[in-house]
Length: 159
Image (cartoon, rainbow, N blue to C red; front, side):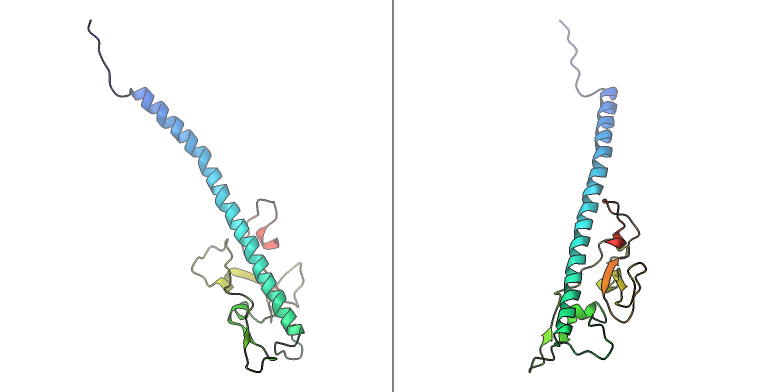
């Protein structure tokens, strides 16, 4: 008996295997991209909550008379950096500072990764209306500068 043993794969087996692997890869990449986007949205929610809490804490300290204010001031910080660098507590005999954030989070959807965190956010002043938020002499609220829409259908700048 003369048997011929073949080793290896035929060309058609290799082509089918590569096609199957390619088909699986095309279905995995959108899922991975969706996971990255969900993670960025979670980071955005957390950053917005932290900064807005810091803004509210600053306002509470101003209303309590712990922050020096001039006539006509709204009680909100002039810049986002003031939340991190702190302000002098006027009720402290030693002149201690009050800090509202440990660090300023970045907008995760901002395209320039080298930009300072404070410049990645769009600002709304106290004097600005909610329909057309504009920066001004203070920081009443913030929102993302991204023009993209979230997975929930709401644009990031409206979060």
